[in-house]
Length: 511
Image (cartoon, rainbow, N blue to C red; front, side, top):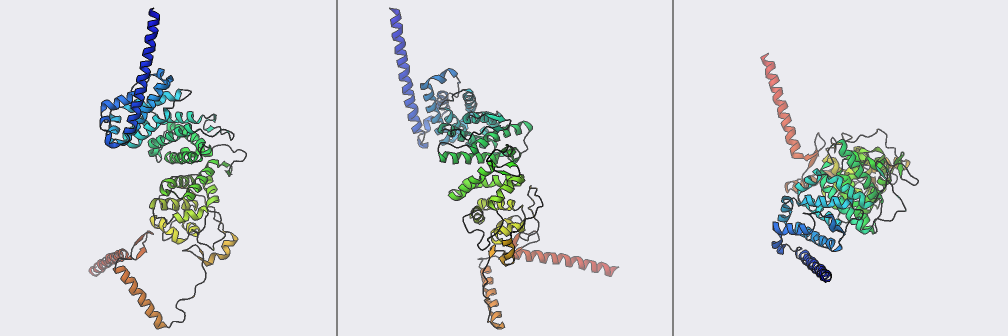
């Protein structure tokens, strides 16, 4: 019976294919483990090996019929993991990934998975691989951006969040909606990281009309990322962190979408503008301040974003200032003492890391409308000196730094009754009311005072000669310069002035 024999052959073929598929998956799992070690990557760093693994991952062919087979999906997932390890550990593989144009297959595969109603479990590893190559290869970042990477990834983000649109730049936010699933949150985080890689250079650029519309569409989705929760609190914090990184990379004028949402019952607001997103950003900053972990990496992006937003939007500045710099009432303690947000930020103004110090000082300075007097009032001259020296404002001249783009209203900073009562007794250096100290020279004769002054001068001279201290002064531009340089400049000016006067006298005698 030929029918029975054909049936047996089909069963044998299916069993044979199943065995081969299982063996292939086992081989890929073995390669995945081995590829973690840079020392054993030799056999894998050839064009042939890289193309073979890429084909198994579906990057060189894109057959939609394979998507329904669980075995094929498992094989593609293992091959993707191998590629991720090889690309991460091998500079050669990174270069050949660009040379073999494998990114084209990766973009095509990602685009096709977006249109599927149920994305496969391989999508996360596709995104992870795309993040690695865009982080490691600048030319691939450019290629992805030129091939519509922002729009593709924005569509992928929209699919992962499963949003519904209420208006052109407003997504529906249902308070009763379930939190973002673990799988979706992982994909969303990878998408945000890739988008940051390909857009971080656009912050200072003037986008075209089409790009501005695309970025505003993306910002509307980022608002959802800020406001929604994940299954795990750590995932929520990580999601918000990457959202803030991406917001700080996008053109500033496109962030107005965050404030364009109509007010809802229970919304945070300032002068009729919705401040829910700004409130979420302030809360995020407070959590990062309290944690104190990896301050530079985790805190500077949110500080920069809040500073730029306050400089650009008056309502945002008013709202944040109300939370960070409330009117001064108790000035019996130094500004940096205490557990308030203001105190923590002022403590960072004298941090050892220059970036952290400048970011914290810039935010406070902008909240003070870049007014030197107001800035010193809230922080004390000792804490403010670093920023004032950097901007050439130590002499107090100039209400704003020359590089500022902010436009501030001329409303006055009204003092509280408590502040006015003790204003004359506040030490401007420490920023607090100091207890009266006894006169150290009380009871000394004039001769003793003169001897003490000479002794102090000799000590300062010795410290200066030994290069332990360097006397500094403020030049005409308000910047700190060595006193020796100021004296040399003064002598030069006198010589030039004297030579001019001599020339004038000689000319007068001739006449």
